[in-house]
Amino acid sequence: MKEKKFKLEGGQIKQLITPMGGCIASDKITVEGLPVVFMYREEPDFEHDCGWRFYSGTETQEYVDDANNLAIYDVNTIANYDPSIIPYLEMEEGTELERVEGTNYFKVVEE
Image 1: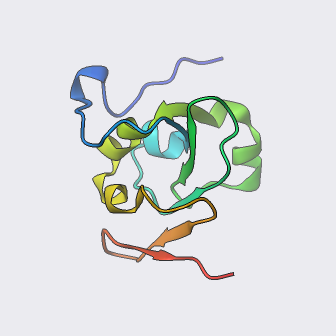
Image 2: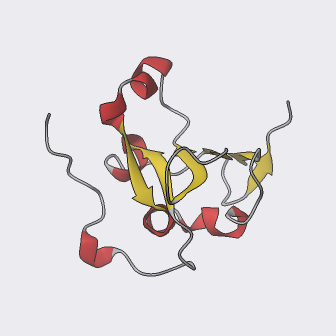
């Protein structure tokens, strides 16, 4: 497996939020540097998982099905990549949000 080159280095990560645990995010965000466009919170899958999942909105199903394209991060790390997620992080499980195009705001995805 090829080593990932992240857009932010460890020294660039600042404590922006109260620690809340881990999440899963796409390499489109952490490696390619794209903004979060779609985020949802589900029942946690593992110990210290807060349930948040973050995607750029450009991932194909094939991309997401390849576990090498996703990784577990501290939510604070993803907040450093895209601080616009911060106001939404306390929302409950079952929440699905999509970025309002051209803004730093998200709207609830309706079923």
